[in-house]
Length: 230
Length: 224
Image 1 (cartoon, chains in turn purple, blue):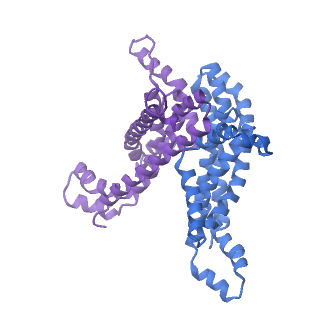
Image 2 (cartoon, helix red, strand yellow):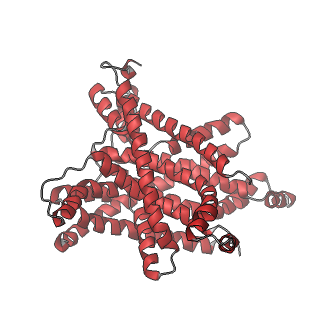
Image 3 (cartoon, rainbow over the protein chains, first blue to last red):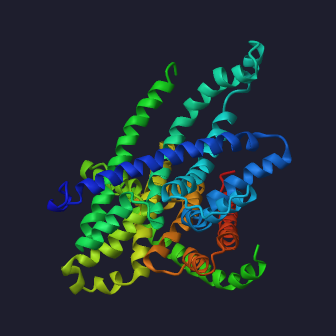
């Protein structure tokens, strides 16, 4: 227990901050993932073969390649890519991207692929009549989508999105290889300096369990909220 | 694009892919037995046994695989008692530590898949077996298990692919699997995109094969 004391003697405060970091990275990654889903879901549903191909390649490649490999691509290639883009605009200084951005982006792209699949499934399972009814009501395209289709999609998507969230939360442990100090990295540091890996890794496992448990509780509430009337 | 590097790294990555496949197949076989064992426990009527199996699957599904590998590889070595037993022969090898972690992890997911498959079997089928005078053991092995296996094939196929991606974590405990070798080549040549394309294609190819194999099995064992 002394090992977990707050302040200079223990690792309690470090691990607490690391837990907040894990939450922050997960949420950022999830939001980045939603943006990717927003772009790629229409592509996957599109009737145009070429657009369809792009959408399908994104989800197939990302879901078929290990997360760690994607993270290594971003970790080693991210700086190079950004500097290349900057050099086109005439900026040639060295650009350092911090571990948080790299990590959140890498995990975000992965979680985006899963979110895309979830949204595609949800939109496809909405009754055709609903689209027609929305048209008949004389709503414009935005109204149709935001007032009629989206609320129903959310209800269907939330249970599966909660799975995506769990996957994303667990995937953030992989960012520790890039040096971002989240739960896993902090445990690694603590285990190294106290020579007590069993305790710190087990404690990390407890922290992750706690996070998944709490997020399940919150998601169940959301699920109830969006299934009003069913 | 450095085509020469891509061609040169291909043989190295392919031989590393064999290690990935070895890790995958061994841990899947062990995991299947663990999964079946815990699925049967989950169906047990005793609350204690049931809760125990539930806790196992909850813990292994609720924590990242990386934590599990680190606990087994770095953590267990710390227990003095373990070092003096025969288990130490296994636990000092990173290869076996990774396999134990993978097998326990996939076992947890498999137990959930099998449990839900067992629960979807219609009671009428079991009753039909009973009315034919078949003993309950034979009903279990000859009727329930084959139906459950058929039922769980699609979900188990996904689990195999997830596990294949999971084996990439073996590279964190010094095993040179496909991801490990890819990382090594990236960090020595600083050509991440090229190596990613080659290694990623190998992974995708394996995913493709597994996907089609499961599809074939699903067709073969479909009911109609």
